[in-house]
Length: 372
Image 1 (cartoon, helix red, strand yellow):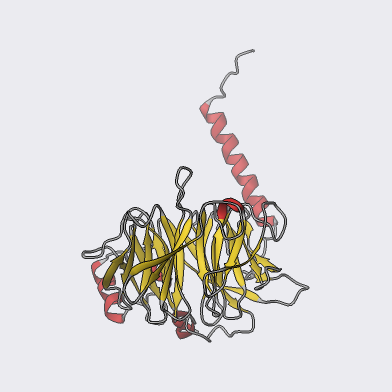
Image 2 (cartoon, rainbow, N blue to C red):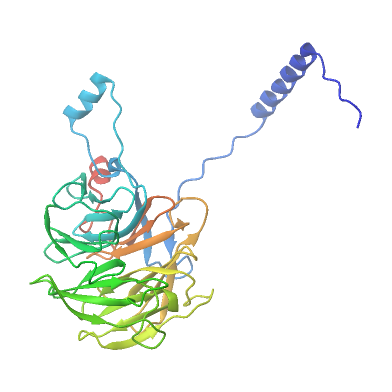
């Protein structure tokens, strides 16, 4: 291959200047592209009747905290930068009257985004109730927070103010506790024990919340109805029953309020109504069941009979609203708002029922409306 002789420096400077001039002339002649306004995702898309509309994304404490005039002046006077606190590896989510709780396994804490209170805090970072590796979480009607700590092999309970209350369970009870759900009447706590490849503890442990003691184990490892293979997350419903993601069997199983098997839906596949990597699960006030699929990057919504109603979101390498890479946890609040956690993008997307006003419900954005 012949050698390529470099051009003299002066010649290269002239060429660069000429090219720059041409670019400037072209820029002056060209009409700038108009800015495309943000259109919040709506599900299902037109022409179907809209059910949900994107409302906001939670990333940092800045998304809900409102600085006082005194604090703003202090930062301006001192030149200090405001410190942002966000998620590192979020997993699950639970919402109660506008308070959004997100477990973070790397930060060893549950992050609280208190929307109506306009405050951000962390739970489980201090003694006597420090967390090791929190995963699944749920909130009782009394506002108490329950956390499955997979490393400590415990369930940790905190009161409505985030103060530690007690521990439940032990290594003699659990193999790998991954999720929790409070019964609709607040008397029992259901804990998913995922087990593992070499473990037979693929079941649900039921606790009496009055005593804090385990009173029953539901299921065993297997593929039959009422059996589990790597169960992951669980959600109770308003009728006293519960639904569980049976991950290794690629299905959701439903149980009655006496913990007897009721029904099942789903199978392995890549079509709507099937699952590839089912993970998070939640129910709404109407009894519908929401299932996160990490491989599909979406949420599928089923009725109580297991019939697919619609799906939300898509798998994407961008973190824009409605796009997910590793979605995991999900919850639906008292007003029907949907909260979806994505581990990869470290975010929580919030969708509002289309018929619900932006200023309605517990989680209406006070900062946004104060600025309107």
